[in-house]
Structures are given as structure tokens and as C-alpha cells.
Amino acid sequence: MLTQTLIHRGTSRQTAGRTARPLPPVAAHATGNSVELMGAPMPFARNAEIYGENEPAEYLYKVISGTVRTYKVLNDGRRQIGAFYLAGDIFGLEVGNEHTFSAEAIVDCKILVIKRSTVVNLAARETDVARQLWAMTASELQRVQDHIMLLIKTAQERVAGFLLEMAKRAPDGNEIDLPMSRQDIADYLGLTIETVSRTLTQLENSAAIAVPSSRRIVLRNRAALTRLNA
Image (cartoon, rainbow, N blue to C red; front, side, top):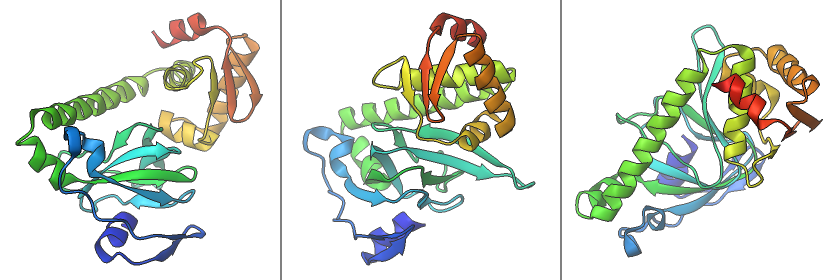
């Protein structure tokens, strides 16, 4: 909702403790046929909504800095997190014309906002853009499939798989600075926060990981984690 309001109206508003600035117009054409060059950067404060469930899917989004979570609130009030998006990740891809999940900034973020219709129209004419769009769609499908497979595993397997996933995306593969909370991790893995904390303690006691702080994890035995996640 926030994205559409700022882009369509071009007015300032207070969001999560900061004033959002209006976006410059999205470029009509992309130099070098790069999808990223069609967007405009936009700041989002910690916990600010980027878009809501069932809102029109008019834009694609790329994380320039920060971390984003997508989530759905279930009928019984539980929250299921669908994905975490880090710097460089693109999100907001939808099969239909509405968003199936909501998206929020976990920390202060800078997001590149790209008009969906512009990308689709250019992809119909430019092979390079069509290839980029296909690659983004395939990557998102793979992420969804991996998450589904993770949710059918045991608690220890889920936590090990999550740590390996985050390590793969970290600059230093064996040291992970987690921007998300334990509750976020629990809602992503379909576990309780108590189970996540207990499982991390078990992995630490078995020397598979070290936990210097609540947001920092060091992988000490990647092979052991990989065996758990197999």
C-alpha cells in the first residue's frame, strides 16, 4: 500500500518514524536492456510495509540494502513467513495481478522499485530483458520449492537447512549476521520460537555452530549441518 501511495500521489507521509520522499518517475526505457535501470530507489524504515497482501502487483522490487520479509497471516492468527530477501534479491514477482503475501522491511532498507508493466512490455520486444525476467521467475520458483521441502523436515533439519541457506548468501560463508529475529526464523520454518532456540543450543553443544550473540552464528562444522539437511 505504501509503495502505490507514494508513487501515484507523489506526496510525503510519515511511515514508521520517518518521512518518505516521493519517487522520481520510473524510466520508460532501460539503457543496455537492464531491468535494474528501469527502477527508482526508495527508502523504507524498519518494520515499514512495502506492499500488502491482495494489493495490486504493479511493481517489482530489488533490495539495494537491508533485508525484507514476505509473510501471510493465517486464519488462526499465526504468521507464516514466505521468504527473506537480502541485498541483490528481487521480489514481488506474482503469477496473477495481486500480491499473495505482504512485504515488510526488517531493518532500514533501500529498495529499487520497478514498474511491472514496463518490464513486461520491454521483455516482449527485447530478448535480453525477457531472459532476465525468465531467470528471476525461475529463481523465485526454485526458492519456493526449496522452502516447501524444508517445511516437511524435522526441527533440527529445518534449522540446519536455514543456516546453510543464509551462509550461502553471506559474504563470509561461515559467519552469518542475521538481520531477522528468532521469531522471524520460527515463522519462516513453521516452528515455535522455543524450538528454534532449543535447536540452536543443541547444534552449539554438538560443536556444529557457535553463537557469539543472538544475531551472529558461526558455522564450525558445515559437513555436520549438511548431513542433517540431506
